Image (tube, rainbow, N blue to C red):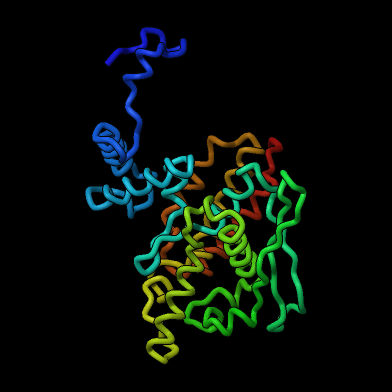
Length: 286
């Protein structure tokens, strides 16, 4: 392989031809993917599903998705969930991918009906920049959530976080309707959870859903995980704005291990209280 003696200068045609593209279409590319996947699987920064020898295959799949989406591999790993054996994106990832693609304005939401009633609903919309056309997504209502079995299932966040769930579901449907290439056809993870639990409910004819995702003491529901991540993002921003980033590792070290463990609502409430104390951080010398 021809090496570039000065990495600050562009590579010559001969050097460019010797570079290996990291993809699964060639033997050399697949070997490069495996090496990168092995490196990622040893990092404590990736989710536990990707760590160690058992997570190596998942790392390869995540790298393949990241390459197709032209996204950062770590971002893909942190936002790709597997629910009942089916993959799905976090709602935040779908919204962010849509907002950053450059073809549309940022997603906005329109609410209809009266809060607290079955008619209360939300639809997502955006403007296509090339044509100026307003693109409107399907309406998602509380009544629809009840009919589909999402609202009444065990551990459902539709009852405690109904407005947020309406936003997430309407945005997920909107992205997969208007620009499915941005999600590679994969739905939002909370959507996978709701639809799969509804299928089990219909098959069993019972209100007891066998779901590791929604059982107490097991992994948190997807909306709770996303809320936890959002609160940590807000905390980091507060430390950064106050010029106190050097203190961030202590705060993160206290809260990061609690992600997905214990009572989700209790942990989220305590974390939210801590974040509210940080905004703004008082940097006035004593």
